[in-house]
Length: 84
Image 1 (cartoon, rainbow, N blue to C red):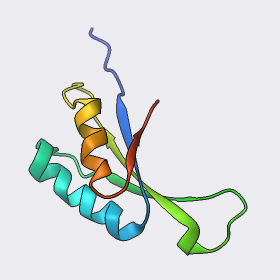
Image 2 (cartoon, one colour):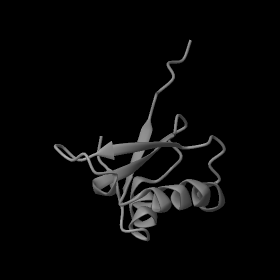
Image 3 (tube, rainbow, N blue to C red):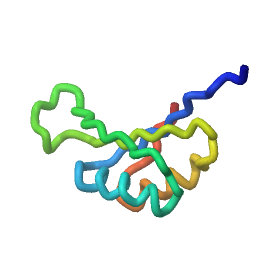
């Protein structure tokens, strides 16, 4: 029985609007079938929602997504790909 790898990519975006746009564009640009998960990441010690970053988490069990391309893609929205 082959082991299934649970590879995830985390894209960090400056706000919710950018995260939603990235999640939608991932399907068009990379052919991602599974809906990415959006997660609000409050900065340490900050209570204000304006100071939150948003994460777009997507699974890539087939390891077919290129990390460098994802980093360049996220940069279009002033974001980046978080290293595991």
